Length: 317
Image (cartoon, rainbow, N blue to C red; front, side, top):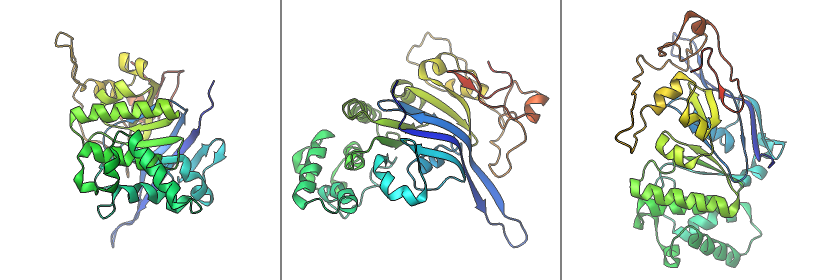
């Protein structure tokens, strides 16, 4: 069995929000006790509503922020701020907005060489240029694109450039933060096919963050469903989409369009507002919106249980 590259145990991130003149500071519980593993050649998808903790998790894995508590390791080595500079080469990120993540004043060749200039200062200029040109070809761009500026490219081409930049340091893990949501549907498939091809060629591990369950269904191997900073369901993709066990997961999947017009579809509309991460209710946070909730649900916090299909629910479906 292949050993995981990244392991997270009880990963937590809280933020302190200062109050006003007459109010106290508050704590935003953005992420609470999340566990997962990333293995070579596999894709783990993180899904959920806005504010569920997906992007916070991405910032922790890419070492942009430090976790409040919990353990995060790469090849068994704890990721701590003192080791960030050495370990960041192993994990790179591709952002949602391909144009906003590229410097408009730099040519593509300069953008691709910049990670090498910062992290490989002993590398010669000729070797940097050769590697940048090879990467341009690998992501499906043409040689003449090397000397052009970002504004001269389409959205799909810009995302190819962003992917190329992320691969310049030969990482083992890519964090894909909504990498296709800003693109047209036809271009989305091209970028996803490119990512699949790169994963097979380079044996990369992907942490794929998305709200588009149709994309997740065709792209991921395993899925974690997040709600208000906690993982409420974790399972292989086939099991989750075939038979979701948490009411929240079932509600999310009910919104996914289906190509078969004859298939019976039950649309579950959640009522009520998402609780504030500064005032998470006692017990199951989803109980206020769950049509199956009981008084026991409102008083008891369920933990993930089961194998390999895990669910955090006292009365799973």
